Image 1 (cartoon, one colour):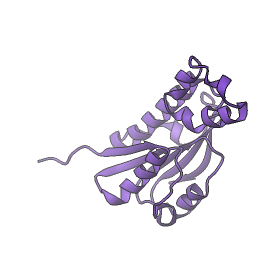
Image 2 (image 1 turned 45 degrees about the horizontal axis):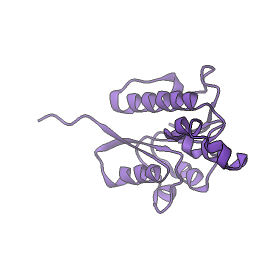
Image 3 (image 1 turned 30 degrees about the vertical axis):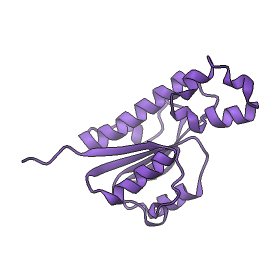
Length: 163
């Protein structure tokens, strides 16, 4: 019997924290990805991870992300998507405009939740970086997008890198 193909784990918000926690709990996961989730309730920030882990965030910084990076033993990156809100990693921004949600929230609250990035662009960037990350660590297909900022994606900044 051949070994199964490597698998990855991904989550958004608290699901991102769950993805981080899944790596030390289950060796079958070869790589993990957190979409803008603080690493609450987990030893991961203070113990780090020994496998690839990508934090793809909207916020400038978070204490648990900084601590996780300091203890990371495997490949790690934190990429920040400018003009984003936490919910801009979901499908909700595509419904927010047609649903007139901006009319029912103070502008600063709306921007904090959904960001000011166009929903189509937010989705395109998320799909691109999630795909190239898992392609690299699950399929062995390197991508320059994970090594340095790209002029094609100026909204993405590299906050922290290891490996």
